[in-house]
Length: 158
Image 1 (cartoon, rainbow, N blue to C red):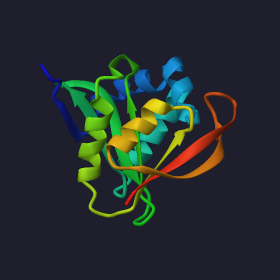
Image 2: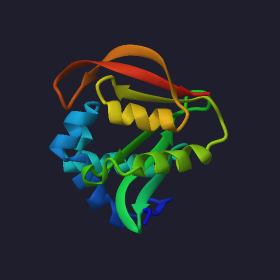
Image 3: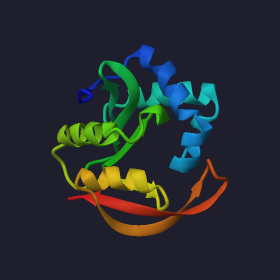
Image 4: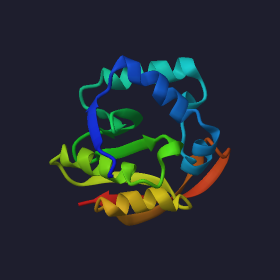
């Protein structure tokens, strides 16, 4: 039986699950591009208070069969909107990220949309490609999780 993926508004009760997901060291290594709030609960709480209070950010909790398994978001000004997502590592490889991201981009009529991924994160790049994003650039950026600059790809949904 297929897993039912739904999005809903973020609730206060989702934040402990998000903290557990974002602070997973193995997931951080794969994602590579993390932020300081992935490692410090006070910074995490401040970040989430800020983004939840920003009307320009579209943030949704991802549910798989009713269980909180991650989040997806759109942020940035029109013409520069970017997507981001994080799915609990225990749920990788089940199509959840693809289904959630497809639902999220369906909420946004403006194009283009952008995404960044570590060049060696084949899973994330594949999720984005399945949702219609194409690689449109390459660069380097500091990967906090790896403590060094890494190769990145820029993807665009036109």
